[in-house]
Amino acid sequence: MNGAESLVRTLLAGDVDVCFTNPGTSEMHFVAALDQVPGMRCILGLFEGVVTGAADGYYRMARKPASTLLHLGPGLGNGLANLHNAKKAGSGVVNIVGEHATYHVALDAPLTSDIEGIARPVSNWVKTSPSAMEVAGDGAAAIAAALEPPGRVATLILPADTAWNAANGIAETPPPVPPPAVASEAVDKAAEALRASDKALIVLGGEALWEEGLDLAGRIAARAGCDLIAEWSNARLERGAGRVSVARIPYPVDQALKVLEGYDTMVLIGSREPIAFFAYPDKPSRLVPEGCAVVELAGPADDIKGALEALLDALGVRDAAPAAVAEADRPAIPSGPAGHAGIAAVLGALLPENAIVVDESITTGRSFAPVTAGAPPHVWMNNLGGSIGYGLPVAIGAAVACPDRKVIALEGDGSAMYTVQGLWTMARENLDVTVLVFANRSYQILRGELTAVGVQNPGPRAVDMLSLSRPDLSWVEMAKGMGVEACKVDECEALARAFEAGLASDGPYLIEVVL
Image 1 (cartoon, rainbow, N blue to C red):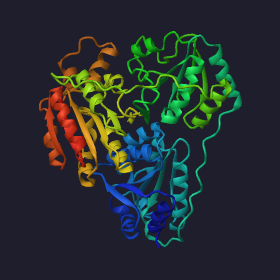
Image 2 (cartoon, rainbow, N blue to C red):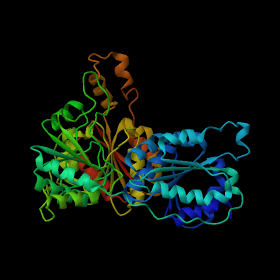
Image 3 (cartoon, rainbow, N blue to C red):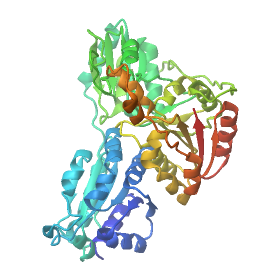
Image 4 (cartoon, rainbow, N blue to C red):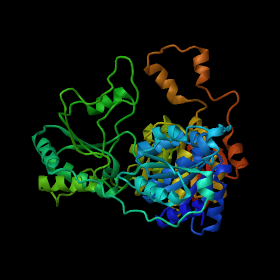
């Protein structure tokens, strides 16, 4: 058994049985081991950002890490943006990054780089295996690191000679470490703050936004007379009819300040204190109202469900009925051009039960939440890291994790171009993903940002840098060129028919929605 085989067997023994991959020469012994050892599903991405984003989406739904296989420092570098997003989302990922043989590094060959230095900003754990005999143990340590709450990015660097030299077997992955319980003092402080408040708000994040967490939070809100809200971006928000419905803090600073004004107490459960996405001239970066007390009950890595249960007990409301439960509500399918409101209505009317919605709709999607709140129960996932190009890869990972569920990717045209290669992987794996690309022919969000930072009259060069025309992107042709069935629509009724066709398909289907 060589080092590569010992690592593959260790990964499988640690329940890491999916590998999203884009390998090169230094990883060939690992590639060979994947062929020789049964049990690992290997999925090829044509760009490393697809590979790393797919691992993020996989963890969000499977609640266990996948591995990636990346080629040296440049290959890892190509995947950094979506590793950044995965780290911000609290997703567990085990990166396997090939390296030159240990004796070859000193020769400074063309692909030699500081792989650990590249990995550290987007990883919670980084190690280079020094010898084949230690590869299996390092692999088990990487899995354990990826499973640390709430989920972490672990990067194991595998020099080529440690992969081909003889190894000593399989290492056992230690059992996952449970999330730390919140202190009783923190529970008492939160309960007292809610009792004393005239207008309190609970800000939810992480597992507090899963169905059980929302039910507990809804019971707390019913008893304490407080409001609930979610962070702007969430790794996994379980919503729909019959579930406690929570709005999200708006992205635009002025809207967020308006929503949050008047609260005297803010309790954080699985969330951070609300802040602006960017700094703007003459606008605050912290969004907490002046004079509002902030009480952190549980952070993202804490036992969030346990914290909610403890707060319920402290308030004496175990048997309370939850507040703000969404009722079933399907809007009618409108006619006319496919504008933002019309698209929202089509989604609300047709979203299937147990759907997984991967949202990178940017500006187009800001009106989607209210109209889809009464759809059948579903999952809604956002980009927590803000680096665009996350949507198609995360949809791949979610579809691999949950092959029995419909995955719907809502994409801005500019964002989708960053990882357009993901369409090829969807076709190759016949993944059940319906993609809606909103073609407004621009980086529309940046036009708004230009105004927000004080540029009132942008000139032609500034506007041109935010335009996606000259030439227009042809999404139907691009999708079909990568094996994905596709169509183009610009009217709501045509969008509804196309969406129904996509949902009826067992494989990938793309709809270009011209705005």
